[in-house]
View 1: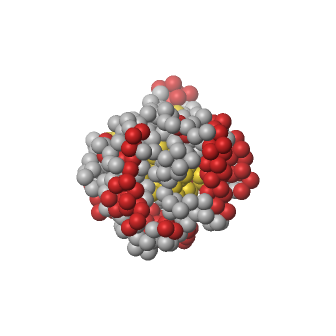
View 2 (view 1 turned 45 degrees about the vertical axis):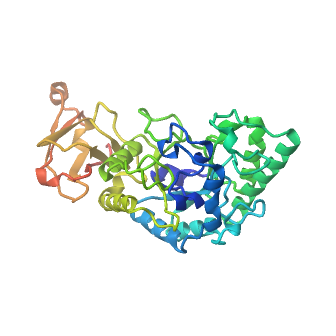
Length: 419
């Protein structure tokens, strides 16, 4: 199983979309009456009202191509699409369920449109699949009487009925992994509602690898360990294993027009720098409207990020963590003989980087403009006296006011190989 592409990607797009996007409500969670961790899901709505929009879901063709083109411009390397969320609505014509695009006016295979569009832009493709299904009668389905929602405390089916549900679940996953060519990543969710034994997680994981030997599976399927998925925050220390932070631009995963609490493009760039410097990936969410178009607030931010990545992408994609925190007061990354220093605050006249082989610093430049920057090395008196051939010291780098980038300035140090 090769994960090299994931280790180098650093930036991806999460797409949360479903029939409920027409109503401008969060995916799935309004069925439960809402939960505190998703303010936009409250106060919820009757199950029948939420599910009514399945009868009118008919997005315009071509939306996925627009997302994919924007993702590529933004420097993203992969994307994950909600093939089926907790509400049980399948975004492909599954033979295992009538609650899908096949019985909506849309009638098209939206998973296929996503896969084709992103592959067409040269990006890797992943699919999100919820283990729970709050619509399926064998799960059993949520009703208005099941409120308030309790994590993992809902009604359970009889063993015979549960077997039938698991057969349905395995069947859907097999469809997703056999009908669309190579799927690079499978993103599960919702495991908290049942035990690993109830999910038959070991058997499911084995079957997944039979169908797609090179696929990566996230930690939200019990027993899967390819990558962990901290949500809505950046870990303060790099996790000891492969990881990916999933993050919304506002506070909602689905399209909720009333949620205007958007992060700025600058904040998103800073998060991307922090994640890359810790060796992780940022899976940034978009929430298409019912017709498939992206909200203008999200397009505007992604276009701004795209312009920054066009100038600074070398400091993000295919990099590894750079310097220790004591060496540089901010994120840093490395790619071969290049070290990238990210300035998340506007610099004074000079900045200082410590603990570097100063005589092997060939040049320093502003990555965004290519402007060569003047720098002055400093080493200890002992190294000077002993004429150490490869001393470790500090660099004081001049950063003229006109060099500073409005989102994040990046300095590039080029090092020669040790002799």
